Image (cartoon, rainbow, N blue to C red; front, side, top):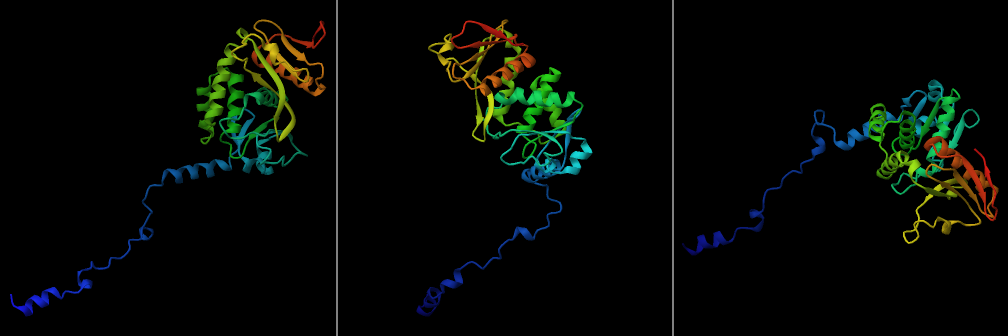
Length: 296
């Protein structure tokens, strides 16, 4: 090879070796008419569809989200007379001058204790229906909190298990889906109700939550492992307690310094145990007094 040809070979410019520029492929320009919707899109469409639905899951019992709860015409067409609002910190009592309301402050988290308000809610729903009313149970979207309470009511009224009732409710309202914590609690309640007369249980009366400090509810006490039979260790003279005995009375224990509101809440809880679990007659016991007072 002569010097001239060698020089020409080694003189190739760097730009000549670069790849040719390629156009950026913009997928947004492609037609999407025939593309199948994604799972996220399908879920969104489903939620939007049921958002405006006032779903009648049982005769006179409706389930919905906030969109329906604040639509007076939709409620009027459904004949709604009572409302159970599960999310008072989000949804207002929109028509409190026209309809009867009960408002709760439930978080949609697995840790939320829904059993402590369950019998209050079932009693409210049952009273509304038995008075000839029609009731809407709603939360933000009509998916978890309100669905849990509706499922629980139908379980109690029909005697059917959770799986069967959940399937029936979901067939009417396709987005109904209690969170895992609520599901576990309903299964626990189903099991507990089956053995209600065979085990002793104790409840303390306490405020439901910071949003409703005056709403007093029964909260189940788990006896400490080191003292499984000494439930008296949990008794506080400032409080009220409910003791459900197997095959015996249901005791309302009233502390020496207990406010009347707590005693009234304890009696209400005891009456609910009678109604929903077949517990024994209610007997009030006052701290420091030997006499017992039977109240039902």
